[in-house]
Amino acid sequence: MTVLDPNFVRSQFPAFSEPSLQGFAHFENAGGSYACGQVIDSLQRYYLQTKVQPYYGFGPSHAAGEQMDQARKRMASWLNVAPDEVNFGPSTSQNTYVVAQALRQHLQAGDEIIVTNQDHEANVGAWRRLESEGVVIREWQVDPESGELDPDGLDDLLNEKTRVVAFTQCSNIVGSMHPVREWTDKIHAAGAMAIVDGVSYAPHGLPDVDALGADIYLFSLYKVYGPHLGVMVMRKTINEQLPNQGHFFNVDHPTARFTPAGPDHAQVASVNGVIDYFEAVYAHHFGVEEATPEKKTSRVRALFQHTERRNLKPLLDFLSSQKSVRLIGKAVTKNRAPTVSFTVQGRDPAEIAALLAERKIGIANGNCYAYRLMPALDIPPLQGVVRLSFVHYTQKEEVSRLVGALDEIL
Ligand SMILES: Cc1ncc(COP(=O)(O)O)c(C=O)c1O
Image (cartoon, rainbow, N blue to C red):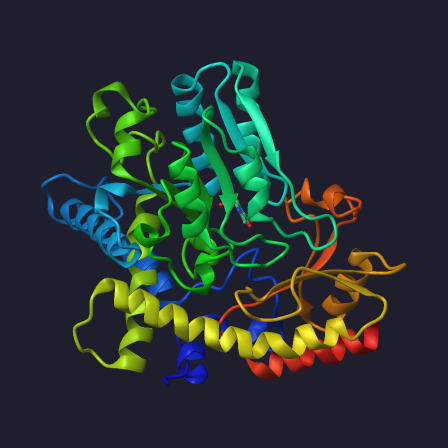
């Protein structure tokens, strides 16, 4: 079995050789990852060579538009969808906001939307606001001990009035990777649409969106080694059903209908850098032989997740051995992202984060915008949890250093 070459991966991220970051261990990747060199180069190149209005016939303008089109095509190929199904918006929260405006016009009073209390607020609040139009909101609730969603809970809520179900592929607090296809099949069988938040999943390997069966799939590239953009895949049939939210004369342009703001051209072009990085990882480990996009996506994903789980085990083992620690989510690595949240009896998460910061280890504390999950777990939302999150480029030695520091602190 081919395993990830950590030295190769590290060499692709300028942050690891940046003098001001020496000695710093980044364990807040669920908030934002480092950018790969290919993205940084692409942004610089764009600003230097093609920083003009794209899509006109003159040289630099044409070149700018070409890069943007290429970015969309290449991202679509890695996600196994059509280019016209890929939308680039400023962020995932902005993308859900726009879709909610479309649903406001599309849904009728009495229609039902199922949301969870596990999700980041980006995939909850936008839909909950439709209550003011008479839409009925149902909440699929987590188990108050484990924070996990039980699929039976979905069965209990689905009915002939359900129009939309919004859930996450992986919670940014609990970390379990959900069986999305099983859930989207149930949702479709009930005649509803599935909106899937992939923000906490995508950094661990781009998904095959077609295989997942999501009608709308969202993630944020600033957590996937890229620029600050939100990717929203909207399947063709949904794009055709929902009312246009862009300029009226763009009604026939699928990629303009749900991204009303002019996009950040340089950032869209730099999505090529993200794909260049994934291509480089693929070529380094599997050679340059031709492979289908699905195969490339799944092989890189498997490489990332294998390394992540190997590095995750000592951290989970350590935390589960601590009497004072309440670990949120599973203590085993199977189908689990390396996003690990916990509370410590009698200690404030902010204090633990500050003690780690003194040791040059960066982590998150608080509710991380999964605000509603906190009371569901009997945790004060403004206090929240300690959250440690890493990705494939994190090294075993860094995890050992984190565990050592936690051992001193707890
Ligand atoms: C799971 C999850 N969903 C949605 C979002 C919102 O993404 P954005 O910041 O692009 O709006 C985040 C951001 O942290 C997140 O972690």
